[in-house]
Amino acid sequence: MSNKINQLFEQRKDQKLLSLYFCAGCPTLEATGEVIKTMQRRGIAMIEVGIPFSDPLADGPVIQSAATQALKNGMNLRTLFAQLKAIKDEVEIPLVLMGYLNPILHYGIEAFCQSCADSGISGMIIPDLPFKDYLDVVKPVADKYDLRVIMLITPETSEERIRFIDDHTDGFIYMVSSAAITGAQKSFDEAKQEYFRRINGMNLRNPRMIGFGISNKQTLEAAQQNAAGAIIGSKFVTLLNESKDADEALDKLFEALKR
Image (cartoon, rainbow, N blue to C red; front, side, top):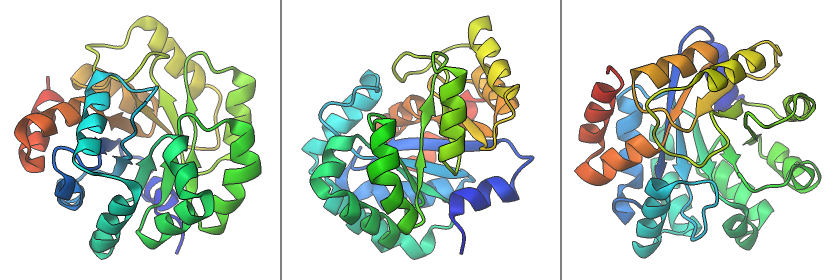
């Protein structure tokens, strides 16, 4: 059985994928499994499950506030893995854990990768993981459990580094649309479009997903035209927090993406 992330990009090469992020344990501690199953039922291609952390450096106010709420609700890695394990057999789409290094180190790299494998996780995004530590410490363990470690690139990432990341990772590359923190944007300016075109021209081995700032038709189409698909975080987290109901939040999200 090959990794679900690789399968997704292989099977749906020509389709414009939509991946969503939400923070585990928000709006309620028990909601995680239900949110994931609802997203799968509504056609979301891949889900990023956020591990709440008290100091999320790359995140804007919306996701920071969701993380704070989730921690207040009592969410932690052990609880999250138990919740994921409970729905493992019902989930067919790839799940990617997104979290900072500190809680993962506390849990232990080997224990973390084993728990990921046991609970149906296909990969992880660790924004503050230094690339050398990834190669020396994390990758050998992740490979053992058939997990993909997804790396982020930004408009500031050099071509040399992007090629290095492409050579040493598998799954997909997360293209951050700007060097800023997460958050919804109205449109992608010419500089961002130029960045998308530049990366397209590099003919990388890995597929790419574009995230940060996607919240309407213009930004969604720009992302989907320039990569395998789009990742939406802040916009969905806001709608989920407002409605407390994943179906209703998805209705509103799909509506917003038409405009």
